[in-house]
Length: 341
Image (cartoon, rainbow, N blue to C red; front, side):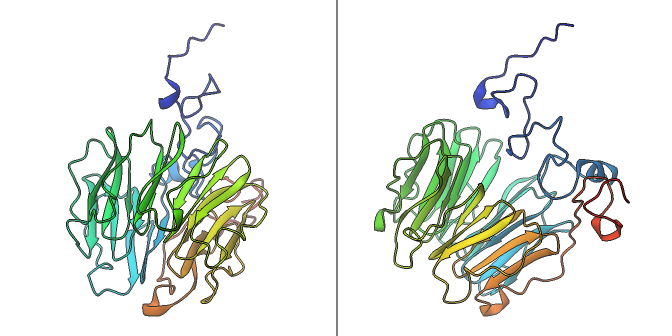
């Protein structure tokens, strides 16, 4: 039988090397037709479809800022910690799908577009006009988003954060303090402040992810994790040898990676931010200024500095389905064995 496939440009193809697949919602290298968890949120497609969820949209997100943290669970977005600028007063959101926590403000993407709240410095919480936004990132007194035109930023420009370079098909963007990094067809491109060389990207081989920290940056490429910029706490020189890093998150003066089912951190550890507790099958990770949060089978877990309660996670509505049998792990007699429910 002859099967004719529609021609899809590589830039729009989630699986450019597999002619039988054009969708890979979570970017894990497994096409949606054979992936049992299309959005990689720990809830199987079977269970999501049975409960009326969108199996291609991540249900669980988390982010850490300077003195507050936020997460999205089955009930929506909630924030905790310092609230001096109403950064934990989450506005009404309609089906939120993206979340980013900055210095003193946060942004989310929902059915209405991009919504930001918290401290507004020079318009950092007032999104620019966007055309079909797909992602959003909150930094220090500025924000950026990805839309049909590429990357758009708004807010304070005192370190040239708004001077976005020419990008070729950007796929992700990351901001934290005074600089931003994006992954595009050419590799990793950074702009904004270059203090400590934080936006001077070294030679990388097939970079797949990048994360901008306080004064340093890190990326995942074929060699593992590569970092550059400020090294005052070993966040550049002490990058550990990793087996299969899939997620990288740069914080204040430390960074963490998700590597073969484990969270590995390095750099400053004065508040314990680089010493993860025992985690069970972690799938999400966010390094903040001096704390870190992760999502595992027990829910949201934070460690490090707990000033203003930013590492004290409130009750969360989290569902997991490790064996993909369509049964919530909370009531599954054998949550790692699909033959037993």
